[in-house]
Length: 58
Image 1 (tube, rainbow, N blue to C red):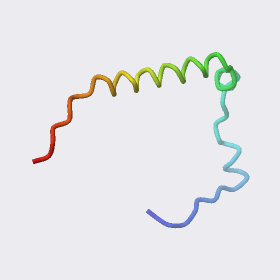
Image 2: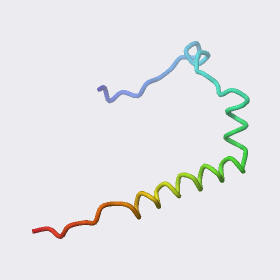
Image 3: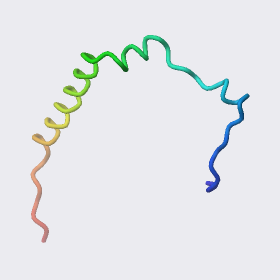
Image 4: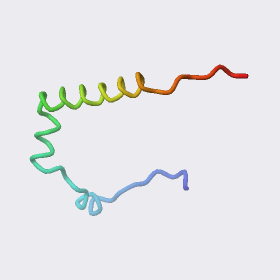
């Protein structure tokens, strides 16, 4: 990979995809964000509680 930053021209920037109205709505809809936050955190808690027991190092 190159260490040079990528620079885009104005013409190339016109082809950048934009989020749909539905995507913007879901990103800013607080009840949906709360639900996603809770769901992800509950999954993490479940994974932590059901992980295999650690064995002491020999």
